[in-house]
Amino acid sequence: MALGWGIRGQIGHERGAMLAGVLGALAVVLVTPDRCKRRRLAWLCLGGGIGLAIGGSMSYGTVAGSLGKPGCALLCTALLLLKGAIWGAIGGGGLGMALSDVRYRARDAFWLIFAVAIYVPASWWHPDGEWSHYDNTWGLLAVALAFMVWLRVVKRDRVAFLAAVASAVGFGIGFPLGSWFCVFGERTGIPIDWWKVAEMTWGLCGGLSWGVAAYVVDEDAVSLPEPKWAWPAALGVVYVAWFVPVWNGLNTFTYWSFERHVMPEGIVVVYGVTVAALLAGLIFWMQLSDWRLWNPTKTAKALLVWVMLSTFLLQFAKMAYPGDIRSGGFWFTHLIFITLMALLVRHVRVGVPKERQSSLRG
Image (cartoon, rainbow, N blue to C red; front, top):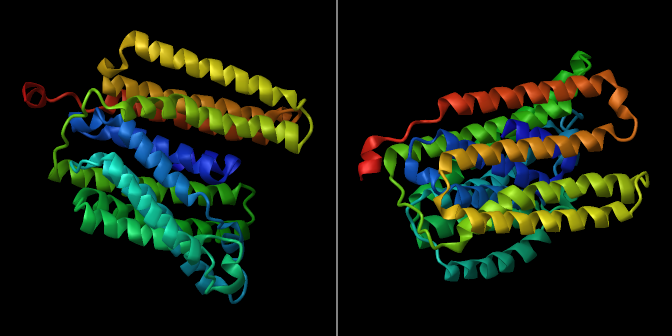
C-alpha cells in the first residue's frame, strides 16, 4: 500500500487511489492463511480498489501544505485526521464486504440512492470556511457514516464494519502523521522528496490497518467459497488486469499530449485502440483457459507483478520523457522502486501460506 500510494502521487485522485487499493487487496489475498478468502481475490480487488478510489475525490493538498503555518497546526491536523478517516472507512468497508460471510445481492445497490441523497446537500456545507469551499469532505463524511451504519445495522456485517473502523483509524492516524513528517523533514534541509515520504506514510498506516483487519477476520470467521457462476469474479479480473493499468496509463499519454503538447494528440487514439484490443485478448484468454479454475494464489501473484510492473513502466515514461531520463535523481528514485518491488515479490514467493490439508479435505 505504501508503494501504491507513493505512485499514486504521480497520478492523483481517484485513479491513483484505485491503484493503491488494488495493491493492498492483493497483498491481503497473498498473506491470508484462509484458502477460501484467496479464492475471493476478484471481490477483494473490486471492493478495495473502488472503495479507496471514492476517497480520491477529496482534496487535501492545501490543508497538508498549510500544516506548518502559524495558527494552522491544530485545525489542519484535525482536518487531515478527518479526511484520512473518511477515506479509510469507505475503502476498508469495501474490502470488508469481500472478506465477510454476509451475502450481498443486486438489490443492495439501491442504498446508493440514499447515499447520493445525503451526499449532495452535505457537500454544500462548509463549516470550516475556505478550507473546504471547493471540496466534498463533508459530503463524503455523511456517506461514510451512513455506509458504516448500513453495514452494522442493516446488513449486520460485523466483519465489514470492523474493517471499516480499522481502516478509518489507520488512515486517520497516517494522514496527519505523514504530513508532519513532511513539515519537519523539510526543515532539516535534507534534500529528499519529503512529500513522497508523507504519501508513503499514509499508505503504510492504511496498509497496516488492512492487514490487522484481515488478521482478525482470519481468526474469527471462515469465508464460504465463491460461487463459480458469479459474473463479478470475471469483472474483478478484468478490473485488475486491464482497467486499472489502462486508466492509470492514460494519465501518461494525456500528460504529454494534451497538457504538455510534446506528443501528438493522436497518440491517445492509438493508445485507446491498443488497449481495446488488449481487453478483447484478455476476455478471449479467460474464456479459452476457463478462468474459474485458475489457482488463486498463483493468479494473485501474477496480478500483483503485472499491476506493479505496468504502472511502474507507465510512470517511468511519464517522468522520463522527453529529457529527464539523464537526471541522476530520476534513476536513483526508480532504482529504489525496482529494488522494493523485487523484495516484495520475493517475500510473497517464499511467504505465501501453504494450502492446509484440513481445508482441502473439508
